[in-house]
Image 1 (cartoon, rainbow, N blue to C red):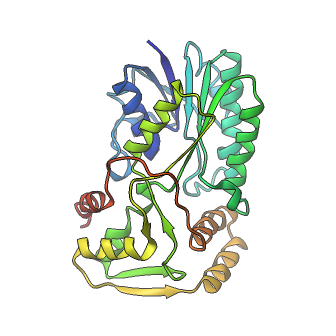
Image 2: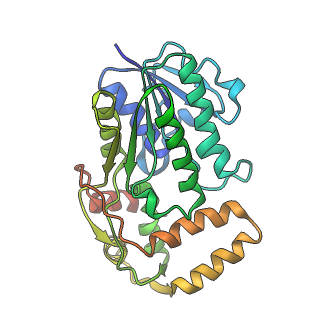
Length: 292
């Protein structure tokens, strides 16, 4: 039986990864910063992992001394560690780059056979964004390390658009840019399958997205249809969004970096290879149950 360490296991993708590894017969060790979070379901219907993982260990990958034994006895390390939103404690580079470097150092010392890492699809088109820079800096280190590896490059996650139905229900939605940019976000369960497949696969990089391609406008329209409302849609031109993002940067660099990601995606099509069975309409119908 192969043994795997899942880092980022209480994140949206990490929870589904724990579930998928376990479903495929792996022995699973989950690395968490807060053991209580492992007992609760995650965002947008991702599962609790306390009953899925064979072992849960508490450690903070930004503090190497707390993860010194994390990789002992495991064959594979899977990491989806990354800063989704500012925590006002760590910088993006401390999490997306340095925490993963700390994990890689531990994996090398433990002679782990393979390291699976989740970065970003089409990263080369978004190198103005600090968290993409941090991801790709680690990718370069991982490729140069003496360990077999695979880089998973997904499109956006369903969790990133989970608020659409709630916003439509609130009666107000913000439209950044013209809304014609296309993308194919992917459900966490579908992406987890791709990540686990990579363990025995030979591909060094795997590009992947969901099975449906939408413009931003089409996703907004679908959310409105499901919410059964007629919200006010406030248009925010890209030049105005840029001014706001720059202004935020004067006060908080972390919030600026996250906002910059959003404005960059509002400018370009991001369509990756289609994969999976989960449909956005079904996901939005689930999200409707969260609206109070």
